[in-house]
Length: 494
Image 1 (cartoon, rainbow, N blue to C red):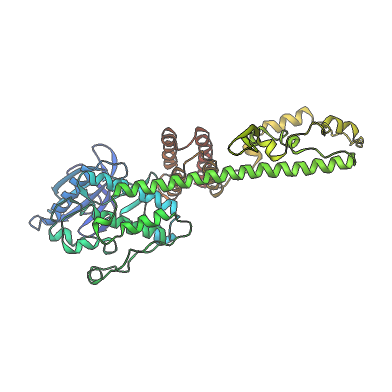
Image 2: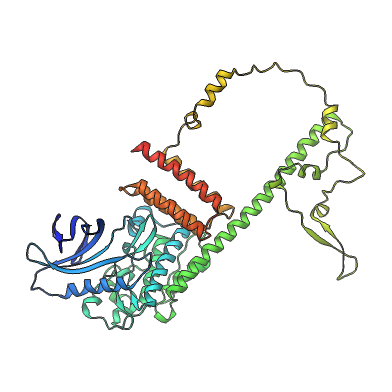
């Protein structure tokens, strides 16, 4: 096939974007619906072996049977004789722009565990949906996971088979050795557990940057003799349940592996638990900050009072706390005072009484008015000349954006990520949503085609996540403003 060729007087081939095995993937233009698509084409002689066309037809049927937002969408399948007299079988799919996960790992090393958990959960959900429909992918690899502006997508159902099917030699010989489950070498019937094993390898590779076992060829895989428990990823900060889950996916016996649905639920639960821990930490930090402000303010007023009235009693802490901003005041809690009789309690007491911060009526603190009246009168400072009306009008006529330097693209992206982190810290955005948005924006900026259009997709994703309860309206509005800064920076650098 060549650029400019037209399949069935409809699909015009524009650019070859990948090739491998017996087929090639082209960027093409659908002249009927006026949209850009991806086409996987198998080009062979008319009288040649039809085995390859059978495989590509199986792929089209398996993928079309699976309907999931994170799986590749199939639009059409067909066979046609080309202008050069050759027979071409093709699958028309949605064109996705993104970056293979394998490229991300090879260039940047291990992923942060939360990002790996988000990607793993999304892939596991696709596999769970496929298994429910009797489809086994059989080639889950980092190369077949695409990181797009919409999130991770699972591609290439080229060697997919149906549960319980006895695969022939053509299907048995395909696959990526580091991800191949041990039972595939024995030729047993197709089972979803082979996908769960590959998912465990995928998780291990994302977390550590390497495969769990050293075999990279079919020959090495066939002679490998593995004994003992599966390796556990050793990653600082990785929750124990995620490490154990990865090891259970790599179990030698298919019956010892969890289901893809369980993997997805466990990874999602680990992200939610991490969010709860972040909220508790944020609460503790706010309380510690309030206590620090109270202590500093108390020390300051004590110094002022001793300077004015050396013999006056120091102000009590309760007076300081009542002058803090309302948002910083701790919520009073009531507890019971233990009684002298076991098992009974006297009247409830407040937190202020427990801390000893309630102002004693016998020692009243001097009011701020009294302190002001007793302080020596300060010397008069020279008056500040008033601005002329013309000068003030000239100042206000200048837009605020012109009075400060516009942020660079790097600074704008940093502000967007900072808003995500702030929202995550106070519990206004789920950690998995924040991680997904951070990854989506990074992929948009790395895409060579129409990053402005990608930002529009991010805005739609913000609306979707707000409707799902993944972030608050206030955080959504703030992220919208930060996206506007990124868009402005992109226009300046164009």
